[in-house]
Length: 92
Image (cartoon, rainbow, N blue to C red; front, top):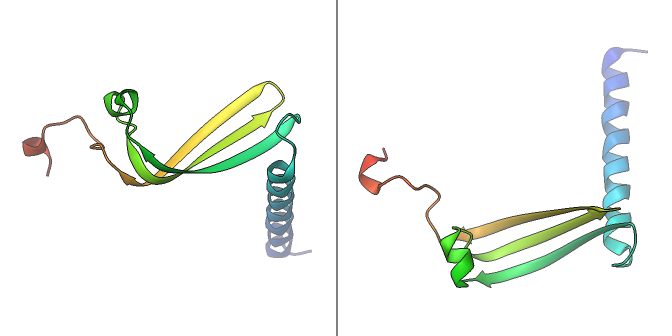
């Protein structure tokens, strides 16, 4: 079997496995051992978020729970705080 065919099958199998895990995680009950939660985050403007440069608008919050491990990811389409702490005159 050619190397290209073998790599193609491996890639397709990995994509199928990833899609299966995501679909199972999203449809699982919240108290299950493996869950994925996706929530829209329209505005985060509280004082703590502003102080830690986490203020954003129109984003997504993704929570992944696998047993006792808990991962939290955040994506924002419109960040409301600067992405750097450098002064504006030092940037190119």
